Length: 412
Figure 1 (cartoon, helix red, strand yellow):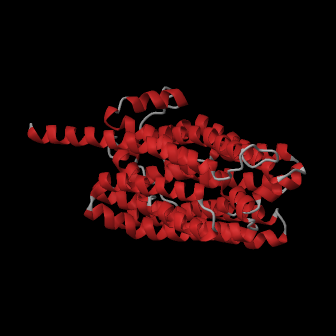
Figure 2 (cartoon, one colour):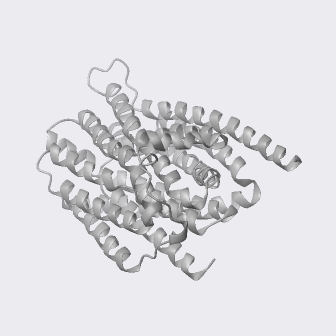
Figure 3 (cartoon, rainbow, N blue to C red):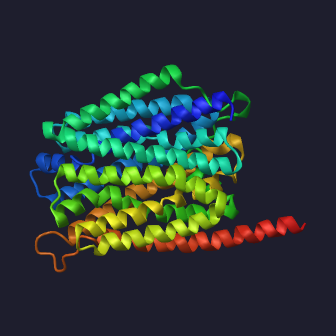
């Protein structure tokens, strides 16, 4: 790897780590903030939490393909910096929100500019090829996990100074990162590889139509949609679930999320590279999905706290499927359309983010509220397991078709 590419990869890792830390800081205190602003119980707060996620995801659904196309036309740097600035503004809104409407306004701003992970993925595609791409995606996912170690742990500690303190700290992190990136981030997409901005590909429906032109990976893209919906169960209801069923406090929620982040780093840094060299992306994808599904079943039916941590281990091991799926899909498009691809994928993932959280939080509320006919706080994870099974079936048949196509091309 050239020194310029090494510096770019290093900066992207820092950006994703700090950005995720800033996002994860707010998780431990969001239930308390919502119950305070709404003067309601945890069940109702969970529903509002789901609609906040819906608002954020709706904006991502609309703007992700636009930002992806802009990054292909003008480079990754301006889009990434605008994302960091948008998140910092969002956290300021959240910190000083006098009522629930301010929370929705802040999440709208963050959703419009929330493209840091997609643009980071496009940067990885710019500077990598072959198996290195899978390993680099694993590195980015590890940075994501590192942010989850720092963020929730810091958020749990800062919660002692009130629900606003974590948001102010997250805003500071994001804005410092913006300043750092403004002066030190080098553009990864060379000018000769850029293309003109195309509105036909820069809207949600045009982006999805463009993905349909890639039949070899279309079912993988749909599988990614279902798997993403499944994994949203963690961020949507984990705090509410552990508070309701096991009576955890804010600090314990933060520590559990930090534990998830720590394991994620280990798996993404070493597990992805180890498995890529020995079994390849396709087997890693199928095996990872099986672990993911098993983890959801453990969460859904856990009756003691230690079983939750067993489920976390299985769930995080299943996370290797993400890097494998990203790599297989990314290798299917040329360099000057990585932004289109990541924008389209961001559009789809944005769709899952505004569909999945209300499903997860509403099901949680339905089975935990006072007077519920059947008490079952683990129902969102059972729904997640079903989504995971659908993704597994789609991936299996897609990989079978890809293998047949590869053998056919080799025989010619």
